[in-house]
Length: 192
Image (cartoon, rainbow, N blue to C red; front, top):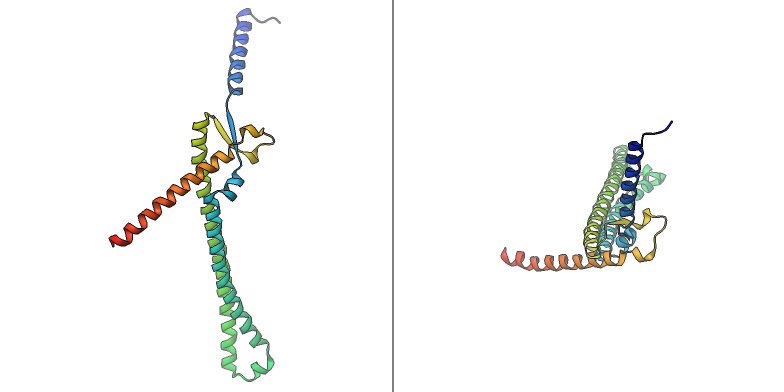
């Protein structure tokens, strides 16, 4: 079966247009940023990791205190001489205290998990927003059409890696924000 010549011509024109659009896409400028490196090594990322560690230490301190109290109470309950020296009411009170402390520990462990998860999510969101803003600036300055995460690429040439430029932009923004925050603090304390 032979196609009419106008269909053949239309198909050929379609292929030419399609081919030229692929050729245009092939000339798009791409940059790659290592998001993990930005999170781990930018000033914002380092500050966030320090804040997470401080929160974790505080929570660990409270959990350790609760655990120590529970162990102390449990040790008393397991000591037959101590238990024999108690009246039945005091022994029951001690058992109730152990149950209450166990419940308190379980509640605190749940709260610990929630607080750390929320703090981590907030940290990651803040750093990713900073990476996004810095990537936009770098893309504009380097005339890039797209910047992708290096971890999503199987391979890329080092010449398209813009991680250093993105981190420099992030660090500059972080320093400006820190400076603005320190300038606001004295005004708010003297104005009150």
